[in-house]
Length: 378
Image (cartoon, rainbow, N blue to C red; front, side):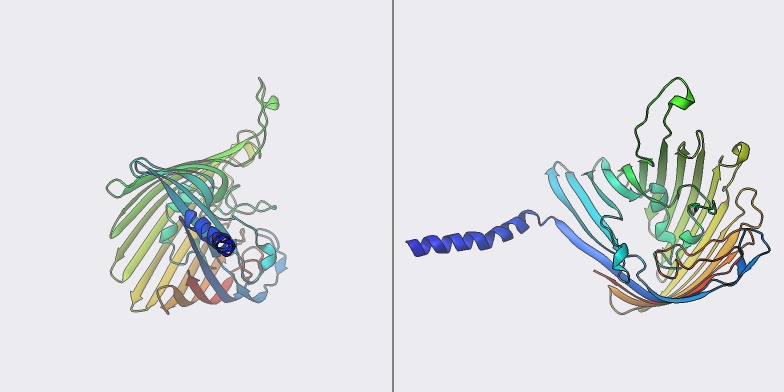
């Protein structure tokens, strides 16, 4: 009898973890490992916008982690077509562990209804960003079109094309995404851009500054066509009372057999300049395409952004060409070349979080990068 009791106790200890896992088996672990060897040259320029003091370009070779990531996501069926949904996603830097954090990417909890859509809260891409991400054939590496599109956030020197990125992943997001009706999906999100206590009073001086964003998108997805229209506005009282900026975007995609084409157009405006003048407002255009043949693909993209407000020579362009070879459904080798051409009054750089992107440049430079990489999804 004593041996049976001991055996039952051991069995209970061994099976408890398995039962716990079974009770929490409503999640998926996923991720991407994307590493590349990048050679980047910044090119020569000047130290100030439209300046005369020359700065000599530099060259850098580095292994970049690009958008390597992992995440957990899951749901619980609550009955009647309703489910609780959640996700925790983290970008990882395979070449630099010192900068890793946790839950830096889309991380949220919410409710999803088959009939009424999804409501979520947490950190998430805005609808404006989501509307055309799929149209970038070089998404998430050094040739990503966000080098010029989406309102590059102004740096400490005020150089950029927005105060807050329009192609952003924001904190404090409350979002609603509708179900698809005849291929049409709508999304809306409100964002608190500054967490602070707010008081009100009869005068402006008695009101604490606040910052918020409203982002909207309508997307049509019915093969072979894709189309999107999006708007986002930022209230920036934390910069100065009454400051604001906004952006509008149109996107179109077509996929047929071996061909994929994507087009994005956007226009931004603001009142951030002297006497509420347009400081960063501009137009932007992106055209990208891909041709698949067997396990291979050739990609080409062109991006262009116009002058920022009244800043002379502040337009820029980007040309990228690449080749992909699929080793399997989840693993590919790729090589790409991308080049930015800045006007004398601007210094756009590559957008992605990589060692190559961190190389600084002067105004009027033409930074270029050659990247050889391996991407594996799991």
